[in-house]
Image 1 (cartoon, helix red, strand yellow):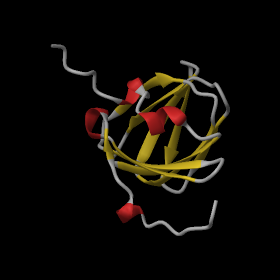
Image 2 (cartoon, helix red, strand yellow; image 1 turned 90 degrees about the vertical axis):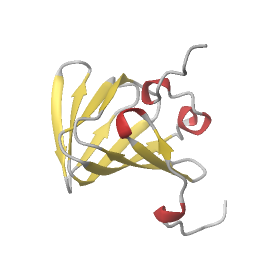
Image 3 (tube, helix red, strand yellow; image 1 turned 135 degrees about the horizontal axis):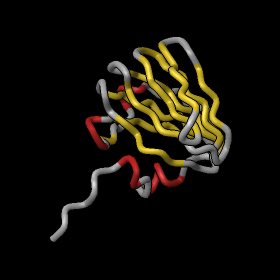
Image 4 (cartoon, helix red, strand yellow; image 1 turned 180 degrees about the vertical axis):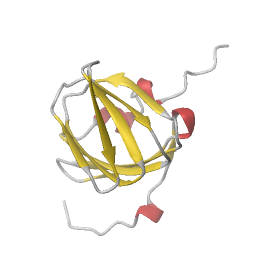
Length: 123
């Protein structure tokens, strides 16, 4: 895969639950997601095989790990989440953050990340 510089302003944005917006950049073996949360937005508990590193650029997120331990990550702080560890998150403030994943989250690429998406309208 050739080297390339990517400007976030050129990356398409997914609109997800509760006003959450997400952009994705992938390499060959690692993925970055830039996520913007409105205050109060929540990501339901989930787990994935990918190891996750979250860096908060602005704002604050409260994570709950394995349904027990609460960890608050503020601007300038980074959280590591091991593979397959259940976690949820809530934006304590309007938040802008970057997630790194290895291996790449194919559920994000294919739109099968149901915990982040509004249910489809029933017919």
